[in-house]
Length: 223
Ligand code: SF4
Image 1 (cartoon, helix red, strand yellow):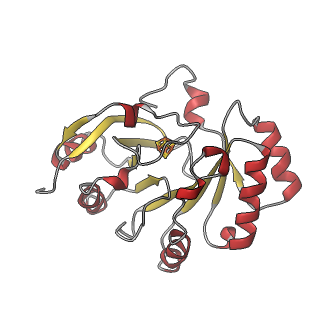
Image 2: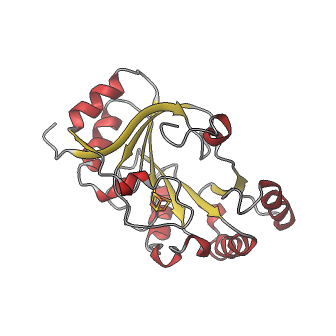
């Protein structure tokens, strides 16, 4: 592949811990750099450290060592790097199920349809809610009509975040478009408190806990 190299934080094989695919084995390509600074960021090392340059062909060779397994591009913010687009195309062409975790601040217009987008909507307590790109919601609707299987994730730090997210889900009728996931920031919002709020709201939203942090609570990288 002749595309420009990518700045990589880490490559690892683990259990997919978030999204409706949680629990499945997954190869993770974690790219360096992020344009946001969320208050709760648990991946600061992706933007505090430079990472290392890798050619797309090297990344693909690493993926090929583990046949058939799903691949997730994450960060940081993967869409900041131009080389991510040909890499996604190549992974799809190689027959992989490809997931893209993105922070919702960049337009998704160049993401190939076969790639599953897991898009964050940033809540007020993240400090980054003004960076949500509103154009992405109609764009996800159009992708859904084309048969894409995207998902939207809210990471909630407080009860106030929950009510903000609930209002947006209702106003935009998001659950009619894509699976919607609510995930608590521990210890700021206790999972049982989020469960109670969700039950009372009766929203058809899926609550999720980060499975990898339950499995490996002492590891902050490579999971
Ligand atoms: S978007 Fe993700 S990687 Fe970037 S600062 Fe927020 S939590 Fe951290």
